[in-house]
Image 1 (tube, rainbow, N blue to C red):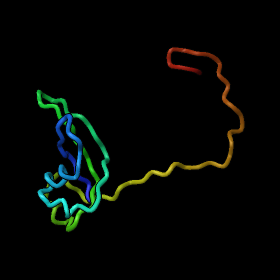
Image 2: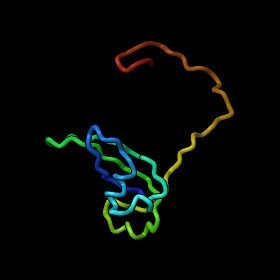
Image 3: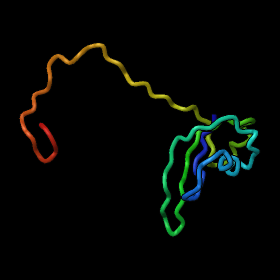
Image 4: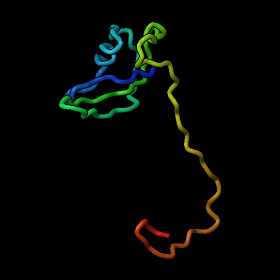
Length: 102
């Protein structure tokens, strides 16, 4: 799986597989699947646009690693730890202050 950074999309435009194909200069048929990892807005200067980071599964991935915005990575999945014990006693709130309860 490849992580592709700095995919540009204009404001008002919907992100699609066409943007990935344009960034990699490949055919849409070569892209098997993709998932958006991060979406941010770039408001530097007068040009306002979105910048996306995407995980994508692509045919012949090694061919696209020459691009500096493309890296071979595994998507990290975070699993929340579960606890079987309940807390021994509840916290005691003494008062309120400028930073919350204490």
